[in-house]
Length: 479
Ligand code: GLN
Image 1: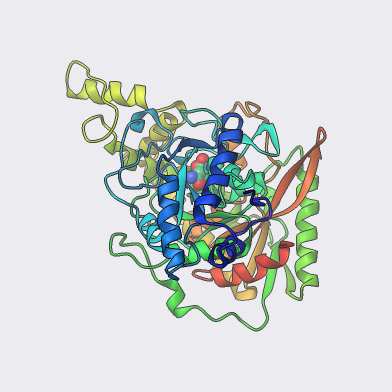
Image 2: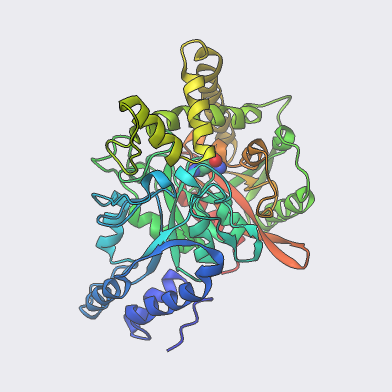
């Protein structure tokens, strides 16, 4: 039986499964076949699970009994930093290569309860540090639209899997853009929820005050279905909040704002013009759809001009603390030395890749006694200013619209200098710093050497207002 995976959405699959057009086993089988064909060249999955069909059989039983939830039997890919009990979870690092998760992340527990089928774990930048999966210890993920290019990162494997019909949807994590940026590079939808809207329990931590788990999907509606399943307060994550309780109403008139001089902070080369062109077309499309448009103009520099430097201080500071636990004693790889300190040194030097070591060093430095005020403290002050700047914008408009990325996907190996990769995060980090929800929607494309590369547009709303994002974002997608 052949299922048209290309045009399939979660909603359509759910309807077809409950109508009996095909079974969950047949659906999972179609994805497994695609994975078998495409994964050797794309490297989106690090592991395809051996129990996919038996998970699907359970889903079929549930569907037959008339107990199907929206996600029952839906084949999903899971980023390799989200724990599934009894499965390997490596954060694409050698230090955790053979580590097996001891419990389910809360999001996994919720998806299991809904009857979703997990196809496998997807590639990422090591410990989610990067924007291209080039920092994975297990090879780069290639972009399905042009295999000489990156799929984005750090959730590049999940984005590529959805774009290449190797999964109907995926879970990623986003600390500074890791869901939205690969979504944009691969032409899919990516949602970074409000900080705390989704439990972080069972996510391998990068920057704990920034990390969010969220969906990668083909439509805004699909992203919403997954978000609705995984969100909610969780007793295992003290920072989780039930935002949706108080803030559910959508205003009668939704307005959006484009901040005019947000590009000041970065030197945009290459595809800047196409990015700007598709960005202004997105603004026009929303105006035509009836949303009220305003332009925010700032006099002089804004706090957003400092988002990137602030992010690249706060995130490594938190990462260096979080990664201290990987010492060869409690988790994963162990390389023995002469004495305990030597064990730590050997294990970490061998187990961590270059970018991870760089960030641990930067993080330890900005937190060190002599430099704390000059870096970490200052970055925290900027964080407050960024939140205030957003708060002021949201007094004027419900949604702020920016591009997701300055350019389309770059060539594998093209960016040698880490700072040039950091610069590509210019539009995504602010939402994490402020904790607000943001969604990337495919909009427009650019042709490079005969290949059509997708571009993305990003919408942001204030705390807990995902509902507004879904409402507006849906107007940017044709289906
Ligand atoms: N690219 C950013 C970084 O390297 C964001 C990563 C992420 O969101 N996990 O830190």
